[in-house]
Amino acid sequence: MKKVVYLLAVLAAIIGLASCNQTNQNEPTSHVPKDKVYQNKVFKDVVVTESGDKIIVTGKAQVFEGVFQYALYDGEKVLIENHYQTDGAPAWGEFEISFEKKLVATNDSKLELFVFSAKDGSKENTLEIPIPKP
Image (cartoon, rainbow, N blue to C red; front, side, top):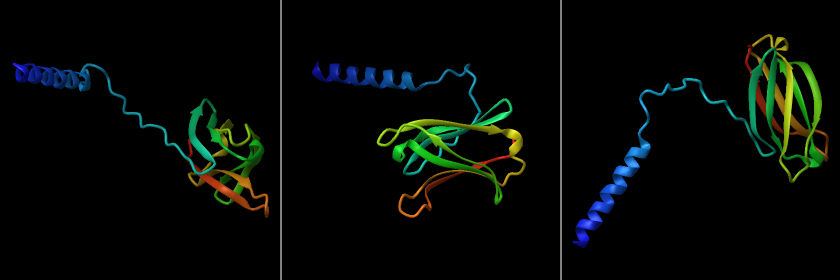
């Protein structure tokens, strides 16, 4: 009798799990690919989106005194160069950088997020994000 009860319990669990994993065939499925997420040691959850005539880059940074730099390039040409202030380390401060779509004229554009070294002023922890022509 114990074996029968055990067998019924196992079968009920299997049927329950199988029904949880089924998808409704009448629901539409999305063919939109998930956003590419960029990260390195000091930047994470970095995503590029478009909204109207803007390109928006959002993410989190864990940087000394909450300051990092960014530069938008078209090939070797610097289009924008600036800094961003967010929460200081050890916190992961959120950021949002936006710029006009019309600045991106070729598929050779990229955004660099980086910090300047306190030791020698060189770029450190550079995160390169390709920005395709809209």
